[in-house]
Amino acid sequence: MQVADTISVREATVSDTQDFLDLLACPKCHSELRVVPQPEGFACEACQLLYQLEDGLPNMLISEARPWPGSAAAATA
Image (cartoon, rainbow, N blue to C red; front, side, top):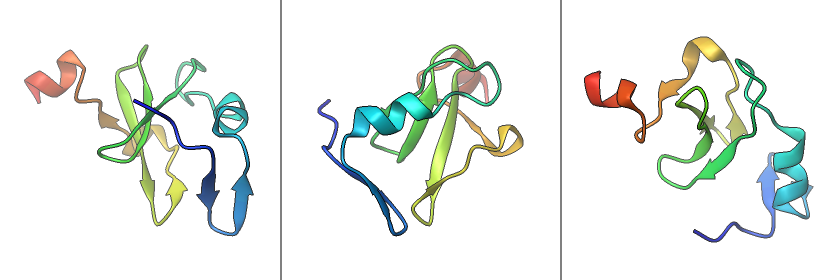
């Protein structure tokens, strides 16, 4: 998977996606997040949670995170 060179979040644009990802961390365990193209959002491999984009903004609320499709939790849900 190739990551785009820019991410637009509302009016703000980060010129380097990696710089943006370096600012983000899983709100539950503080691990690194990775970009997931479908459904669009950010996944934490440690927690097996997906934080989806809603209206172009990342929803980082733990209570609204979804089981990440690569996780065992998603297979049992």
